Length: 553
Image 1 (cartoon, rainbow, N blue to C red):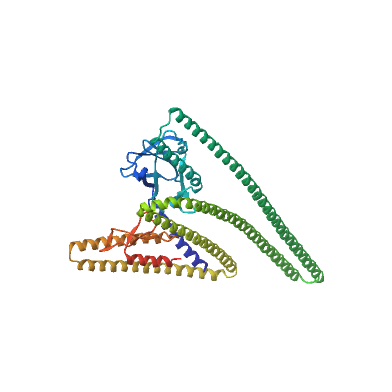
Image 2 (tube, rainbow, N blue to C red; image 1 turned 135 degrees about the horizontal axis):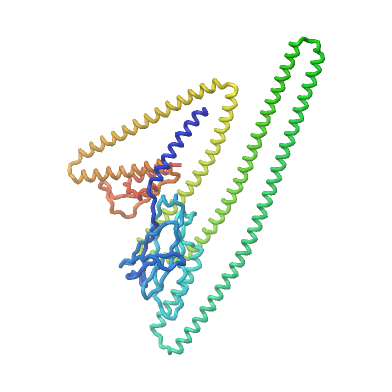
């Protein structure tokens, strides 16, 4: 049984290693793409503007153009930090800070292009726009969302200030249109505005300073409490370990004393018997000496076995203590992640409430953009669900593996002890099990190859018959295109299966589509996460995949 388990484990290890090697050969994406539209007042495109791509605190960089309709597309490398500056002559520039650092494994699953919509404000003399030297928004990879997103905590602070600045600019524009004041009056207004702005900035800095002091104090108190709790826990564990070690030591000393008393009693009995049989012949004395030697050897073997048992118990105890410590560490990490997630969700809720008014206005003007935003939100939710399912599946797999390792270790130990008593029988059973496993593996491989070969032959025959039944050249061309599409779909599904992916493929339904599949309009799409992209599906194919992957655990 142990040999058969080892054979199965080796086959699974080899299969996993081959799949991993094939996955590493797949070229992973190298660019993170940001696209969108830059507009000015009246939702007009910011034609003639430019986009500067640089690094935080470093002058210079590359330049990208804005199309005549206001659209743009820029490509960024992963694992870097960027500042993206949107500019146009006569307008206030806007800066976005983007951090593209993310795990390589996540990059291989590809990202949807990030959409950033920018509205530039007209520059007006007399209004301080130093606020716009700071980033309007910060974008980074959010592990909770499993995608890139804005820093909501930062946006909650910046957006009200930007809206206030925008209102000031508009008010100044209106004021300039009807301005009949003298130069002296204009200078006085500017001085008053500067004084007011200075006062507001001082109040803001004071509030931020007070908040920073309060936050630092709260963090210091929390760190002190956490440290005290950890020291108390470690002291309790140390005391418990010391008590257990003392108990094991006392038991060992008692066992040693009992064994010494037993040996002393046996020795005394041997001396008494020797004196009683002093007159016996030399053969009897030799037999008695041989018996005493056998008893001593038995005692030595028993002591050796006892020592092995004690060492095994010590090792098991050390393993148990290590497991308890690891569990405590993981519990602390899980608790922190839960708290961080709750904070992020609260910040997202506040930001969502403030953003709703602006989104409602955009929805009224552009219905299509709303549909696109809803689709992106749905895909993000599906990705989050897939990520959580993957985590749950991995945890279950880790627990199953740990249980299986413990079971295999127990079987190995039992097999070792049994082998001492019946080595020849066990060796014969092992040889028979190895031979049977080899034959079963070879037979399974042969049957799988024959089945795959027959399946391919049947498919080729059916395709040839269907192709021969077509009359027009256009029908044949459409048939060949459909064959290629289905082959590509089957190849993606096979790659997905070979990767042993622990997440479900992403699927969606088109609201509108111009793609025609075998005379029918494309109904939806599927993405297996292989970096190839979306595959169009008919209604029947979509329903089939939906049913299959919904049932997948």
